[in-house]
Image 1: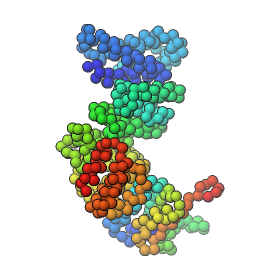
Image 2 (image 1 turned 135 degrees about the horizontal axis):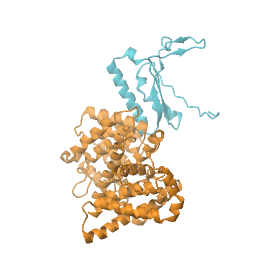
Image 3 (image 1 turned 180 degrees about the vertical axis):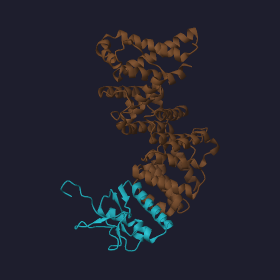
Length: 110
Length: 403
């Protein structure tokens, strides 16, 4: 999930609504027995460490949307995973994106 | 008199003796316990019931156990020396039937029987026999099978535990959470066996539920096993059991939740459920029992409110992330229809891959009712063709008739 820091652009009430939508979205995936794991990532205390070892306060400023969370699903195909992604409430925000990636098998074959 | 005592005292004698002899000798422990009751039946019918029947039983059991230990030469040679060193050189044979040891032995026995080495079915069977003092006929009734099958099942399970050399003890603190998981699963299965049983025998069904609660309560009472998830399971069972008298009518038919007479709900059990749910609210681990108990709490609130259904929906969302089950998926979708509306729920329901489940089509029927009654009827009819028990069929037929 790539999106803006919600606390910067919305009221606590609005964030509550998004939270519920997100929980319902994940619950729907879990109800199909396709949920594996996932979590939100906090914007507070985010840091970026560059190759020069310079540390900055998050990637904000340069990029508007950053990784706000991830979910691991048990999809049969990329298409199915894309269908799950389409339901994510994050996409209500213009410019926000969902990136769908396969997880490496870690056995050298990918 | 004797059947009641058998139910409560047999398991205590077996646990204590088995703990003393080792699991390998469980059949001898069972024989001594059975013999004790046989002697009681014979003696009491002639001389009358003694003043303190329980003490009388313990005394007989103790003597029989001592005789056995003294008489058995092989035992003397092979096991007794070990026993003696274990007990700091004490030579006199003592059988400790104090309340403390009875309780400890039963708890330890619980961990032995609910061991992952044997199948859940065997765990439940052995629990009923050894921890709950059920007769073989009663167990066979509960499982809708015959005595022979149960005897075989129990025999094999005991053999397996013996072969695996499972010791009778409370697991070490580092292991306790993991081992408790199996114990709690068995207790919950035992409860469900009673709650959702196909057996028509109401008394046995209730007994199964209350025995499961008793076993769980023993865990709550022990400081090593009094964990949040144990309290959560006990809370959950209290909430469910509170509807026991309301969910089945005089003819033995199931009464659906919405048709239940709330006056028949047991308020004492509801408040006990609340108490144990509070006790469960500690630690940093949220178990599925916590979530299920919280859902069960909301089920004790019959009034439809947005707050209720939103809470139930979110609890199911989390429960499904911890552990998927078709029934949780269906209940979640029902809660979704109540919290977010039927149309959203229909969309979500159609994504569930549960085409062999009659509850799935019952749910779809419910969701389509008043939206598209033709479709609703189709789904109910599909559910009817998949339903197995007469009670389920009746329930679905009633819904079709109402359309």
